[in-house]
Amino acid sequence: MNKTENSKNVHEVYGDIALHVYSREEHTVSRQKISDNALKVLYRLHNAGYEAYLVGGGVRDLLLGEQPKDFDIATNATPEQIKTLFRNCRLIGRRFRLAHIMFGRDIIEVATFRGHHQEQEKNVSQQSKDGMLLRDNVYGSIDEDAERRDFSINAMYYNIGDYSIHDYAGGIEDLEDRIIRLIGEPEVRYREDPVRMLRATRFAAKLDFDIEEDTAAPIEELAPLLRDIPSARLYEESLKLLQAGCGLETYHLMREYNLFQQLFPIIAPHLTSDYASNTEQMLDLVLDATDQRIEEGKRVNPAFMFAAMLWYPMMEHAVKLMASQNLSDYDAVMEASNIILDEQVKSTAIPRRHTATIREIWQLQLRLPRRTGKRAYRLMELNKFRAGYDFLEMRGEIEGGEVAELASWWNTFQTAGRNMRQAMVNDLGGASTKSGNRRRRSPKSKKPKSSQ
Ligand code: ATP
Ligand code: MG
Image (cartoon, rainbow, N blue to C red; front, top):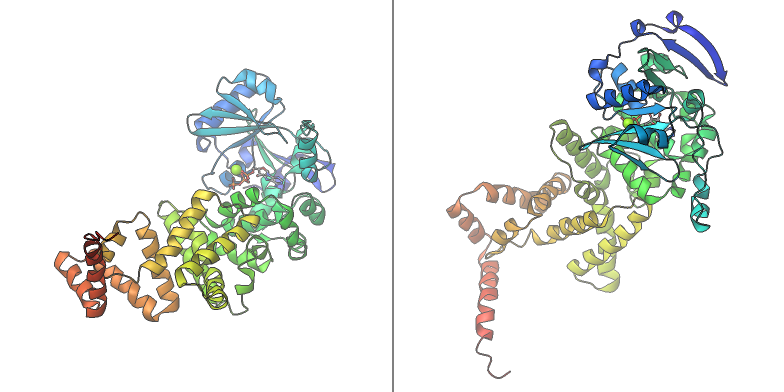
Protein backbone atom coordinates (compact mmCIF):
# COMPACT_ATOMS: atom_id res chain seq x y z
CA MET A 1 0.00 0.00 0.00
CA ASN A 2 1.27 3.47 -0.78
CA LYS A 3 2.00 5.84 2.02
CA THR A 4 0.45 9.25 2.36
CA GLU A 5 3.25 10.99 0.42
CA ASN A 6 1.82 9.43 -2.72
CA SER A 7 -1.67 10.63 -2.15
CA LYS A 8 -3.05 13.63 -3.89
CA ASN A 9 -5.69 16.10 -3.07
CA VAL A 10 -4.93 16.51 0.61
CA HIS A 11 -6.91 19.13 2.40
CA GLU A 12 -7.85 19.90 5.96
CA VAL A 13 -11.49 19.48 6.67
CA TYR A 14 -11.97 19.86 10.37
CA GLY A 15 -9.89 19.49 13.51
CA ASP A 16 -7.73 16.43 13.18
CA ILE A 17 -9.66 15.25 10.18
CA ALA A 18 -7.72 15.50 6.95
CA LEU A 19 -8.82 13.91 3.74
CA HIS A 20 -6.42 11.79 1.74
CA VAL A 21 -7.65 10.38 -1.51
CA TYR A 22 -5.96 7.21 -2.71
CA SER A 23 -6.54 6.54 -6.37
CA ARG A 24 -7.28 3.03 -7.67
CA GLU A 25 -3.58 2.43 -8.37
CA GLU A 26 -2.64 3.42 -4.84
CA HIS A 27 -4.61 0.86 -2.88
CA THR A 28 -5.39 -2.84 -2.93
CA VAL A 29 -9.18 -2.91 -2.72
CA SER A 30 -10.52 -4.83 -5.68
CA ARG A 31 -14.14 -5.01 -6.78
CA GLN A 32 -13.77 -8.75 -7.06
CA LYS A 33 -13.66 -8.96 -3.29
CA ILE A 34 -16.88 -6.98 -2.84
CA SER A 35 -20.07 -9.02 -2.79
CA ASP A 36 -22.25 -8.92 -5.90
CA ASN A 37 -25.15 -7.58 -3.89
CA ALA A 38 -23.13 -4.74 -2.43
CA LEU A 39 -21.85 -3.89 -5.90
CA LYS A 40 -25.38 -3.91 -7.28
CA VAL A 41 -26.48 -1.41 -4.66
CA LEU A 42 -23.43 0.79 -5.13
CA TYR A 43 -23.87 0.90 -8.91
CA ARG A 44 -27.58 1.53 -8.84
CA LEU A 45 -27.08 4.50 -6.51
CA HIS A 46 -24.22 5.76 -8.63
CA ASN A 47 -26.12 5.38 -11.90
CA ALA A 48 -29.01 7.32 -10.40
CA GLY A 49 -26.65 10.22 -9.84
CA TYR A 50 -25.93 9.80 -6.16
CA GLU A 51 -22.62 9.44 -4.40
CA ALA A 52 -22.13 5.87 -3.22
CA TYR A 53 -19.35 4.53 -1.04
CA LEU A 54 -18.49 1.31 0.64
CA VAL A 55 -17.55 2.25 4.19
CA GLY A 56 -16.56 0.98 7.62
CA GLY A 57 -15.52 -2.58 8.30
CA GLY A 58 -15.92 -3.52 4.63
CA VAL A 59 -13.15 -1.22 3.47
CA ARG A 60 -11.01 -1.85 6.54
CA ASP A 61 -11.10 -5.62 6.21
CA LEU A 62 -10.52 -5.58 2.45
CA LEU A 63 -7.45 -3.40 2.95
CA LEU A 64 -6.23 -5.93 5.51
CA GLY A 65 -6.79 -8.73 3.03
CA GLU A 66 -9.61 -10.19 5.13
CA GLN A 67 -13.09 -11.15 4.04
CA PRO A 68 -15.49 -8.56 5.51
CA LYS A 69 -18.36 -9.77 7.69
CA ASP A 70 -20.79 -7.46 5.92
CA PHE A 71 -20.76 -4.53 3.55
CA ASP A 72 -22.07 -1.17 4.69
CA ILE A 73 -22.81 1.57 2.20
CA ALA A 74 -22.98 5.32 2.68
CA THR A 75 -24.64 7.72 0.25
CA ASN A 76 -25.99 11.24 -0.12
CA ALA A 77 -29.37 9.84 -1.19
CA THR A 78 -32.01 10.13 1.53
CA PRO A 79 -33.77 6.99 2.77
CA GLU A 80 -36.84 7.93 0.74
CA GLN A 81 -34.76 8.38 -2.39
CA ILE A 82 -33.07 5.05 -1.75
CA LYS A 83 -36.45 3.40 -1.40
CA THR A 84 -37.57 4.57 -4.82
CA LEU A 85 -34.50 2.90 -6.35
CA PHE A 86 -34.94 -0.53 -4.79
CA ARG A 87 -38.03 -2.68 -4.67
CA ASN A 88 -36.43 -4.93 -2.04
CA CYS A 89 -35.84 -2.03 0.34
CA ARG A 90 -37.01 -1.59 3.90
CA LEU A 91 -36.51 1.54 5.96
CA ILE A 92 -35.64 0.83 9.56
CA GLY A 93 -34.65 2.69 12.72
CA ARG A 94 -36.21 5.53 14.63
CA ARG A 95 -33.19 7.38 15.89
CA PHE A 96 -31.52 7.20 12.58
CA ARG A 97 -33.28 5.90 9.55
CA LEU A 98 -31.41 3.36 7.51
CA ALA A 99 -32.29 1.49 4.37
CA HIS A 100 -31.95 -2.26 4.29
CA ILE A 101 -31.76 -3.72 0.81
CA MET A 102 -32.75 -7.34 1.04
CA PHE A 103 -31.32 -10.07 -1.13
CA GLY A 104 -32.82 -13.13 0.45
CA ARG A 105 -30.93 -13.54 3.69
CA ASP A 106 -28.21 -11.13 2.67
CA ILE A 107 -28.94 -7.59 3.78
CA ILE A 108 -27.01 -4.59 2.57
CA GLU A 109 -27.30 -1.64 4.91
CA VAL A 110 -27.37 1.77 3.27
CA ALA A 111 -27.02 4.87 5.41
CA THR A 112 -27.41 8.48 4.36
CA PHE A 113 -24.41 10.64 5.35
CA ARG A 114 -25.02 11.88 8.85
CA GLY A 115 -24.46 15.49 9.85
CA HIS A 116 -23.61 17.19 13.12
CA HIS A 117 -26.07 17.37 15.87
CA GLN A 118 -26.05 16.94 19.60
CA GLU A 119 -25.89 13.33 20.61
CA GLN A 120 -29.36 12.28 21.58
CA GLU A 121 -28.54 9.12 23.48
CA LYS A 122 -29.94 10.51 26.73
CA ASN A 123 -33.09 11.89 25.15
CA VAL A 124 -34.45 8.71 23.73
CA SER A 125 -37.04 8.21 26.45
CA GLN A 126 -38.07 11.83 26.31
CA GLN A 127 -38.72 11.47 22.63
CA SER A 128 -40.98 8.52 23.11
CA LYS A 129 -42.83 10.14 26.05
CA ASP A 130 -44.20 13.03 24.02
CA GLY A 131 -44.62 10.59 21.16
CA MET A 132 -42.79 12.81 18.76
CA LEU A 133 -40.32 11.28 16.39
CA LEU A 134 -37.49 13.55 17.22
CA ARG A 135 -35.67 14.53 14.08
CA ASP A 136 -32.44 12.72 14.61
CA ASN A 137 -32.12 12.29 10.91
CA VAL A 138 -29.73 15.13 10.45
CA TYR A 139 -28.21 14.42 7.10
CA GLY A 140 -24.86 15.84 6.23
CA SER A 141 -21.89 15.79 3.95
CA ILE A 142 -19.46 12.92 3.65
CA ASP A 143 -16.87 14.83 5.73
CA GLU A 144 -19.34 15.24 8.56
CA ASP A 145 -20.25 11.60 8.26
CA ALA A 146 -16.58 10.66 8.59
CA GLU A 147 -16.15 12.74 11.72
CA ARG A 148 -18.99 10.97 13.44
CA ARG A 149 -17.47 7.55 12.93
CA ASP A 150 -15.55 5.98 15.77
CA PHE A 151 -12.04 5.01 14.69
CA SER A 152 -9.72 6.19 11.94
CA ILE A 153 -9.64 2.70 10.43
CA ASN A 154 -13.45 2.73 10.23
CA ALA A 155 -13.65 6.07 8.42
CA MET A 156 -12.43 5.08 4.98
CA TYR A 157 -14.78 5.31 2.02
CA TYR A 158 -14.43 3.36 -1.21
CA ASN A 159 -15.92 5.41 -4.02
CA ILE A 160 -17.69 3.33 -6.64
CA GLY A 161 -17.51 6.33 -9.02
CA ASP A 162 -13.75 6.17 -9.53
CA TYR A 163 -12.62 3.30 -7.26
CA SER A 164 -10.65 5.66 -5.06
CA ILE A 165 -10.49 5.47 -1.29
CA HIS A 166 -11.29 8.58 0.71
CA ASP A 167 -9.43 8.34 3.99
CA TYR A 168 -10.57 11.02 6.40
CA ALA A 169 -8.65 10.36 9.58
CA GLY A 170 -5.39 8.74 8.59
CA GLY A 171 -6.94 5.30 8.63
CA ILE A 172 -4.60 3.84 6.05
CA GLU A 173 -1.55 4.88 8.05
CA ASP A 174 -3.09 3.52 11.22
CA LEU A 175 -3.83 0.24 9.46
CA GLU A 176 -0.18 0.02 8.50
CA ASP A 177 0.90 0.86 12.04
CA ARG A 178 -1.77 -1.47 13.42
CA ILE A 179 -3.32 1.13 15.68
CA ILE A 180 -6.85 1.70 16.95
CA ARG A 181 -7.26 5.47 17.12
CA LEU A 182 -10.44 7.29 18.01
CA ILE A 183 -11.42 10.23 15.82
CA GLY A 184 -11.62 13.48 17.81
CA GLU A 185 -11.25 14.03 21.54
CA PRO A 186 -11.37 10.58 23.18
CA GLU A 187 -13.15 11.57 26.36
CA VAL A 188 -15.80 13.48 24.42
CA ARG A 189 -16.33 10.59 22.02
CA TYR A 190 -16.64 8.06 24.84
CA ARG A 191 -19.11 10.22 26.68
CA GLU A 192 -21.18 10.55 23.49
CA ASP A 193 -21.30 6.79 23.23
CA PRO A 194 -19.62 4.64 25.89
CA VAL A 195 -19.99 1.54 23.69
CA ARG A 196 -17.05 2.90 21.71
CA MET A 197 -14.85 1.78 24.62
CA LEU A 198 -16.00 -1.79 24.06
CA ARG A 199 -15.52 -1.44 20.33
CA ALA A 200 -11.93 -0.29 20.88
CA THR A 201 -11.09 -3.55 22.68
CA ARG A 202 -13.09 -5.60 20.20
CA PHE A 203 -11.19 -4.30 17.19
CA ALA A 204 -7.85 -4.40 19.04
CA ALA A 205 -8.34 -8.09 19.82
CA LYS A 206 -9.87 -9.05 16.49
CA LEU A 207 -7.29 -7.28 14.35
CA ASP A 208 -4.41 -7.76 16.77
CA PHE A 209 -3.86 -3.98 16.87
CA ASP A 210 -2.74 -1.74 19.74
CA ILE A 211 -5.04 0.86 21.17
CA GLU A 212 -3.34 4.21 20.66
CA GLU A 213 -2.26 5.90 23.89
CA ASP A 214 -4.70 8.82 23.97
CA THR A 215 -7.52 6.51 22.87
CA ALA A 216 -6.71 4.09 25.67
CA ALA A 217 -6.05 6.60 28.45
CA PRO A 218 -9.60 7.53 29.54
CA ILE A 219 -11.16 4.08 29.24
CA GLU A 220 -10.53 2.65 32.69
CA GLU A 221 -12.02 5.68 34.38
CA LEU A 222 -14.95 6.14 32.02
CA ALA A 223 -15.84 2.45 31.90
CA PRO A 224 -18.66 2.83 34.49
CA LEU A 225 -20.53 4.95 31.91
CA LEU A 226 -21.48 1.63 30.32
CA ARG A 227 -23.94 1.12 33.13
CA ASP A 228 -26.20 3.69 31.47
CA ILE A 229 -26.39 1.80 28.19
CA PRO A 230 -29.58 -0.19 27.58
CA SER A 231 -29.08 -3.84 28.50
CA ALA A 232 -30.40 -5.03 25.14
CA ARG A 233 -27.64 -3.18 23.31
CA LEU A 234 -25.02 -4.47 25.74
CA TYR A 235 -26.24 -8.01 25.24
CA GLU A 236 -25.81 -7.70 21.47
CA GLU A 237 -22.44 -6.14 22.02
CA SER A 238 -21.37 -8.89 24.45
CA LEU A 239 -21.95 -11.47 21.74
CA LYS A 240 -19.83 -9.52 19.28
CA LEU A 241 -17.14 -9.27 21.91
CA LEU A 242 -17.12 -12.83 23.20
CA GLN A 243 -18.74 -14.98 20.52
CA ALA A 244 -17.15 -13.75 17.34
CA GLY A 245 -13.92 -15.72 17.26
CA CYS A 246 -11.59 -13.73 19.51
CA GLY A 247 -13.47 -14.00 22.78
CA LEU A 248 -10.58 -15.03 24.98
CA GLU A 249 -8.32 -12.22 23.86
CA THR A 250 -11.15 -9.70 24.00
CA TYR A 251 -12.09 -10.72 27.55
CA HIS A 252 -8.53 -10.24 28.73
CA LEU A 253 -8.37 -6.80 27.15
CA MET A 254 -11.77 -5.82 28.51
CA ARG A 255 -10.66 -6.85 31.97
CA GLU A 256 -7.53 -4.79 31.74
CA TYR A 257 -9.60 -1.75 30.89
CA ASN A 258 -12.20 -2.28 33.61
CA LEU A 259 -14.85 -2.93 30.95
CA PHE A 260 -15.59 -6.56 31.59
CA GLN A 261 -16.40 -5.68 35.19
CA GLN A 262 -19.15 -3.32 34.00
CA LEU A 263 -20.84 -5.90 31.82
CA PHE A 264 -20.51 -8.65 34.40
CA PRO A 265 -20.65 -7.05 37.84
CA ILE A 266 -21.46 -10.44 39.38
CA ILE A 267 -18.22 -11.87 38.08
CA ALA A 268 -16.10 -8.87 39.06
CA PRO A 269 -15.51 -10.04 42.68
CA HIS A 270 -14.20 -13.34 41.28
CA LEU A 271 -11.41 -11.69 39.31
CA THR A 272 -8.07 -12.03 41.07
CA SER A 273 -4.58 -10.70 40.55
CA ASP A 274 -3.22 -14.14 39.66
CA TYR A 275 -6.04 -15.00 37.26
CA ALA A 276 -6.50 -18.34 38.96
CA SER A 277 -9.92 -18.37 40.61
CA ASN A 278 -12.33 -21.07 39.47
CA THR A 279 -14.34 -18.47 37.58
CA GLU A 280 -11.24 -17.21 35.81
CA GLN A 281 -10.25 -20.74 34.86
CA MET A 282 -13.77 -21.32 33.60
CA LEU A 283 -13.65 -18.12 31.54
CA ASP A 284 -10.42 -19.23 29.94
CA LEU A 285 -11.79 -22.68 29.17
CA VAL A 286 -15.15 -21.66 27.78
CA LEU A 287 -13.90 -18.72 25.74
CA ASP A 288 -11.07 -20.77 24.30
CA ALA A 289 -13.50 -23.55 23.40
CA THR A 290 -15.85 -21.01 21.84
CA ASP A 291 -13.07 -19.49 19.74
CA GLN A 292 -12.06 -22.96 18.57
CA ARG A 293 -15.59 -23.90 17.59
CA ILE A 294 -15.92 -20.72 15.54
CA GLU A 295 -12.59 -21.43 13.90
CA GLU A 296 -13.92 -24.87 12.94
CA GLY A 297 -17.11 -23.33 11.57
CA LYS A 298 -19.27 -24.89 14.30
CA ARG A 299 -22.24 -23.22 15.91
CA VAL A 300 -21.85 -21.62 19.31
CA ASN A 301 -24.54 -21.27 21.93
CA PRO A 302 -24.54 -18.08 24.02
CA ALA A 303 -26.40 -19.94 26.80
CA PHE A 304 -23.50 -22.35 27.27
CA MET A 305 -21.03 -19.51 27.54
CA PHE A 306 -23.08 -17.49 30.00
CA ALA A 307 -23.82 -20.61 32.04
CA ALA A 308 -20.09 -21.24 32.37
CA MET A 309 -19.22 -17.65 33.19
CA LEU A 310 -21.80 -17.42 35.95
CA TRP A 311 -21.59 -20.94 37.40
CA TYR A 312 -19.22 -20.37 40.32
CA PRO A 313 -20.80 -17.06 41.35
CA MET A 314 -24.16 -18.86 41.27
CA MET A 315 -22.85 -21.81 43.28
CA GLU A 316 -21.31 -19.52 45.86
CA HIS A 317 -24.72 -17.99 46.29
CA ALA A 318 -26.41 -21.36 46.46
CA VAL A 319 -24.06 -22.56 49.20
CA LYS A 320 -24.91 -19.49 51.25
CA LEU A 321 -28.61 -20.17 50.78
CA MET A 322 -28.21 -23.78 51.86
CA ALA A 323 -26.63 -22.63 55.08
CA SER A 324 -28.81 -19.63 55.82
CA GLN A 325 -32.19 -20.99 54.73
CA ASN A 326 -31.61 -24.66 55.20
CA LEU A 327 -32.53 -25.42 51.58
CA SER A 328 -31.78 -28.65 49.74
CA ASP A 329 -29.01 -28.39 47.16
CA TYR A 330 -31.58 -28.51 44.37
CA ASP A 331 -33.76 -25.76 45.81
CA ALA A 332 -30.75 -23.63 46.64
CA VAL A 333 -29.43 -23.88 43.08
CA MET A 334 -32.86 -23.02 41.68
CA GLU A 335 -33.15 -20.02 43.93
CA ALA A 336 -29.59 -18.84 43.36
CA SER A 337 -30.06 -19.26 39.59
CA ASN A 338 -33.03 -16.91 39.70
CA ILE A 339 -31.15 -14.33 41.70
CA ILE A 340 -28.00 -14.44 39.60
CA LEU A 341 -29.80 -14.37 36.25
CA ASP A 342 -32.15 -11.57 37.34
CA GLU A 343 -29.10 -9.59 38.28
CA GLN A 344 -27.15 -10.35 35.11
CA VAL A 345 -29.94 -9.41 32.71
CA LYS A 346 -29.88 -5.91 34.20
CA SER A 347 -26.55 -5.33 32.46
CA THR A 348 -26.84 -7.67 29.48
CA ALA A 349 -30.39 -8.61 28.52
CA ILE A 350 -29.87 -12.32 27.88
CA PRO A 351 -33.09 -13.44 26.14
CA ARG A 352 -35.46 -15.78 27.93
CA ARG A 353 -34.84 -18.74 25.67
CA HIS A 354 -31.21 -18.59 26.69
CA THR A 355 -31.78 -18.11 30.42
CA ALA A 356 -34.00 -21.19 30.29
CA THR A 357 -31.14 -23.18 28.79
CA ILE A 358 -28.69 -21.81 31.34
CA ARG A 359 -30.95 -23.08 34.13
CA GLU A 360 -31.20 -26.48 32.47
CA ILE A 361 -27.43 -26.80 32.17
CA TRP A 362 -27.02 -25.83 35.81
CA GLN A 363 -29.71 -28.25 37.00
CA LEU A 364 -28.08 -31.03 35.05
CA GLN A 365 -24.96 -30.57 37.14
CA LEU A 366 -27.00 -31.80 40.10
CA ARG A 367 -28.55 -34.64 38.17
CA LEU A 368 -25.50 -36.05 36.44
CA PRO A 369 -24.12 -37.65 39.63
CA ARG A 370 -27.34 -39.68 40.02
CA ARG A 371 -26.86 -42.47 37.59
CA THR A 372 -28.33 -45.57 39.18
CA GLY A 373 -31.08 -47.80 37.79
CA LYS A 374 -32.39 -46.32 34.57
CA ARG A 375 -31.37 -42.79 35.43
CA ALA A 376 -28.17 -42.67 33.38
CA TYR A 377 -30.06 -43.85 30.27
CA ARG A 378 -32.80 -41.31 30.79
CA LEU A 379 -30.35 -38.48 31.33
CA MET A 380 -28.69 -39.26 28.04
CA GLU A 381 -31.96 -38.80 26.23
CA LEU A 382 -32.39 -35.26 27.48
CA ASN A 383 -32.14 -32.49 24.97
CA LYS A 384 -29.51 -30.63 26.92
CA PHE A 385 -27.53 -33.69 27.97
CA ARG A 386 -24.63 -32.94 25.65
CA ALA A 387 -24.34 -29.36 26.91
CA GLY A 388 -24.61 -30.56 30.50
CA TYR A 389 -21.91 -33.15 29.95
CA ASP A 390 -19.54 -30.73 28.17
CA PHE A 391 -20.10 -28.37 31.05
CA LEU A 392 -19.29 -31.08 33.59
CA GLU A 393 -16.11 -31.83 31.71
CA MET A 394 -14.93 -28.24 32.02
CA ARG A 395 -15.75 -28.29 35.72
CA GLY A 396 -13.77 -31.51 36.05
CA GLU A 397 -10.72 -29.84 34.55
CA ILE A 398 -11.00 -27.07 37.10
CA GLU A 399 -12.17 -28.89 40.19
CA GLY A 400 -10.53 -32.28 39.68
CA GLY A 401 -11.50 -34.96 42.25
CA GLU A 402 -15.00 -36.37 42.18
CA VAL A 403 -16.18 -34.03 39.45
CA ALA A 404 -13.36 -35.10 37.15
CA GLU A 405 -14.13 -38.76 37.90
CA LEU A 406 -17.78 -38.22 37.17
CA ALA A 407 -16.97 -36.55 33.87
CA SER A 408 -14.74 -39.41 32.91
CA TRP A 409 -17.45 -41.94 33.88
CA TRP A 410 -19.89 -40.18 31.58
CA ASN A 411 -17.33 -40.01 28.84
CA THR A 412 -16.89 -43.78 28.93
CA PHE A 413 -20.58 -44.47 29.38
CA GLN A 414 -21.57 -42.57 26.24
CA THR A 415 -19.29 -44.54 23.97
CA ALA A 416 -19.71 -47.91 25.68
CA GLY A 417 -21.80 -50.78 24.34
CA ARG A 418 -24.91 -52.14 26.05
CA ASN A 419 -23.26 -54.69 28.29
CA MET A 420 -20.53 -52.36 29.33
CA ARG A 421 -23.06 -49.68 30.19
CA GLN A 422 -25.03 -52.05 32.35
CA ALA A 423 -21.86 -53.14 34.09
CA MET A 424 -20.95 -49.52 34.73
CA VAL A 425 -24.31 -48.82 36.29
CA ASN A 426 -24.10 -52.01 38.38
CA ASP A 427 -20.63 -51.02 39.50
CA LEU A 428 -21.98 -47.85 41.02
CA GLY A 429 -22.63 -49.88 44.15
CA GLY A 430 -25.21 -52.19 45.64
CA ALA A 431 -26.81 -49.62 47.90
CA SER A 432 -27.60 -47.15 45.16
CA THR A 433 -28.71 -49.90 42.78
CA LYS A 434 -31.12 -50.98 45.41
CA SER A 435 -32.45 -47.47 45.78
CA GLY A 436 -32.94 -47.50 42.02
CA ASN A 437 -34.93 -50.73 42.29
CA ARG A 438 -36.90 -49.45 45.20
CA ARG A 439 -38.02 -46.47 43.18
CA ARG A 440 -39.26 -48.71 40.43
CA ARG A 441 -41.06 -50.94 42.82
CA SER A 442 -42.77 -48.23 44.80
CA PRO A 443 -45.45 -47.27 42.24
CA LYS A 444 -46.40 -50.96 42.05
CA SER A 445 -46.74 -51.19 45.79
CA LYS A 446 -48.98 -48.15 45.64
CA LYS A 447 -51.27 -49.78 43.12
CA PRO A 448 -53.38 -51.87 45.45
CA LYS A 449 -54.03 -48.85 47.63
CA SER A 450 -57.70 -49.59 47.90
CA SER A 451 -57.81 -47.97 51.28
CA GLN A 452 -57.58 -44.47 49.75
P1 ATP B 1 -17.57 -5.45 11.97
O1 ATP B 1 -18.88 -5.37 11.22
O2 ATP B 1 -16.51 -6.18 11.27
O3 ATP B 1 -17.73 -5.84 13.38
P2 ATP B 1 -17.60 -2.61 11.51
O4 ATP B 1 -16.51 -1.59 11.62
O5 ATP B 1 -18.23 -2.79 10.19
O6 ATP B 1 -16.99 -3.95 12.07
P3 ATP B 1 -20.23 -2.05 12.47
O7 ATP B 1 -20.73 -2.18 13.86
O8 ATP B 1 -20.76 -2.91 11.40
O9 ATP B 1 -18.65 -2.23 12.59
O10 ATP B 1 -20.38 -0.52 12.08
C1 ATP B 1 -20.14 -0.04 10.77
C2 ATP B 1 -19.45 1.30 10.82
O11 ATP B 1 -20.29 2.26 11.49
C3 ATP B 1 -18.15 1.33 11.61
O12 ATP B 1 -17.06 0.95 10.83
C4 ATP B 1 -18.06 2.77 12.04
O13 ATP B 1 -17.59 3.57 11.00
C5 ATP B 1 -19.52 3.14 12.29
N1 ATP B 1 -19.90 2.94 13.71
C6 ATP B 1 -20.46 1.84 14.24
N2 ATP B 1 -20.70 2.00 15.55
C7 ATP B 1 -20.29 3.23 15.86
C8 ATP B 1 -20.28 4.00 17.06
N3 ATP B 1 -20.74 3.49 18.21
N4 ATP B 1 -19.80 5.26 17.00
C9 ATP B 1 -19.33 5.78 15.84
N5 ATP B 1 -19.31 5.10 14.70
C10 ATP B 1 -19.78 3.85 14.68
MG1 MG C 1 -19.88 -4.01 9.71
